[in-house]
Length: 174
Picture 1 (cartoon, rainbow, N blue to C red):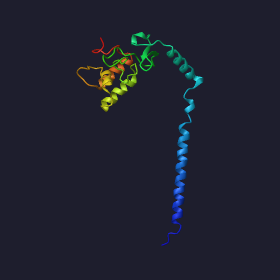
Picture 2 (picture 1 turned 90 degrees about the vertical axis):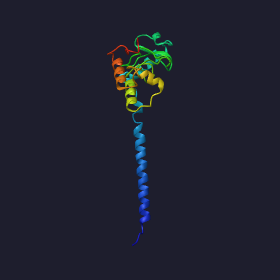
Picture 3 (picture 1 turned 90 degrees about the horizontal axis):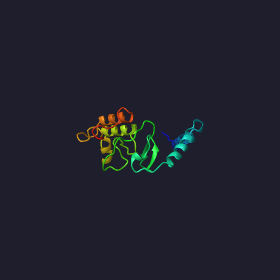
Picture 4 (picture 1 turned 45 degrees about the horizontal axis):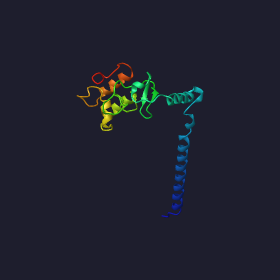
């Protein structure tokens, strides 16, 4: 048997494979940034409202307790200024002693307000325990905190609170 030309054929296959991989990498990289400049659509007013809200919040008063902020705002823990609440979010009904301001009950992600993200964090902790630090566990445990750990019932209580079905976490906030 003769194997003449086998080395050349293998070289062509290797070269063709390299060219194919290079083309795929270029296509993936160029398509990944194709919509980067479309994040704000000025014709819909998204950009201008972003700028206006940013300016409005920059001029907001400093806050050291949430009661300094007007209705419809919350104390942003990053800049310690009153900021506009996102849609479908509420200020925490009360605050946890020893956890640090402005961390209120129900605010599992400690961003200063209670919303759907907090409910999702609680459900994630129920399914895969161990991701939350002790402060987050204290804030997320809104249903019978003295007798139970974090459960799906805590997520339900958080959801009912940010949707406005209840006004407080009974048993914690008085």
